[in-house]
Length: 190
Image (cartoon, rainbow, N blue to C red; front, side, top):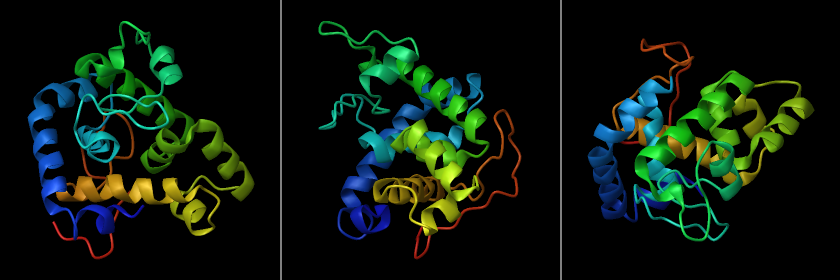
């Protein structure tokens, strides 16, 4: 789904509420992202994933603020069981999601591909990169090698980043200066 069409024109109150929830979460989320070497701009993922709701549940079984699947949560140290599920814990799930995003960045070398892999899975993105012979999200998207959901997901996160005031995507973990990886969202209005 196209984020701008889905949220901005029709449900401004829904997006506004999600952005407000993100603002309330940032004092907890941003320091964790920083401590894990992930740009704080990537807190925008929670707006697209869960609307900033820590107890959000997807039909596929993803749970929590970051919508982590059970296996991903376990892989990053969370307890995921019938009586205790740490994907619902904002701090613990943020640490897990940040480590996952950082690992995806290390694997693919760009935040846009890391976001694509966060949505579709590492294997799907790796196959797309191998098939195209290029590690470039716009190219993979334009050639329709990635799933439609992922081709919409990455611009949705970038749109939320833009709404939050970011103009540039950081190029590497721990880097706080503007870089040459610039994003634009067509017809976006801050």
